Image (cartoon, rainbow, N blue to C red; front, side):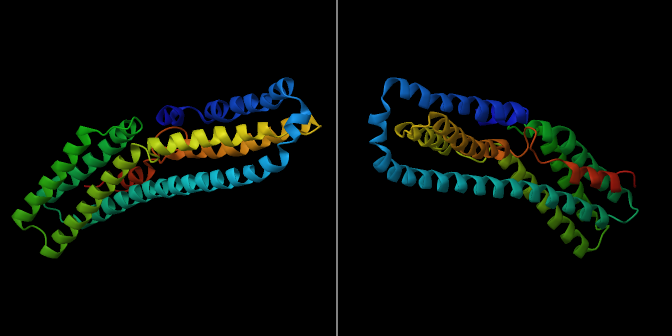
Length: 260
């Protein structure tokens, strides 16, 4: 469900998660007031107000924790892509010798970057990974090993090339892992049930000014549900309108793709 919501246009996600539930929540006090008298509801105000403060704080801490965790993991995804691009650029610069074996290694790197941009990103948007990109990475390793066997480059250069290649591999695994979603199912259940209970708790209160009570319920609902919207929007860092682009890898291709 979170993947489906995260792939929707942002306005549609806001409509489903914020606007419609808020409209339903604002109708709650009206329905309750028709069934229960103002006098009976106002007797709950004092004790319910104390309990609601506790409920509100608990849910606020929970949703703040979820937002911070999701944002940190989203930032980890951005860092992984930048590390992958930086390692690829360094790897390319290390293959400066004009030998044919070096040229084939550069070609293998260019092929990997091209496939990563064209196939990994669409697959990650669906919580999958591309086997073609995995094979291209294996080919890059094989080309580098062949280069090491022939002794074309200095050992220190080869050691650095393998280190950068390991960085590329680790960065790719990080983004593939994050593409499957950050928030576990149990936390989604707690977040949505908590939102329902927190908003529904306001129905135990009553004021003589029903319009003011409806407005206050609406404001609370918008604030709570906007927090959920933020979490949904960035839960899958490579899906939907708010996602991590492949631009760093594209820049590496632009910088070195045309060089031999």
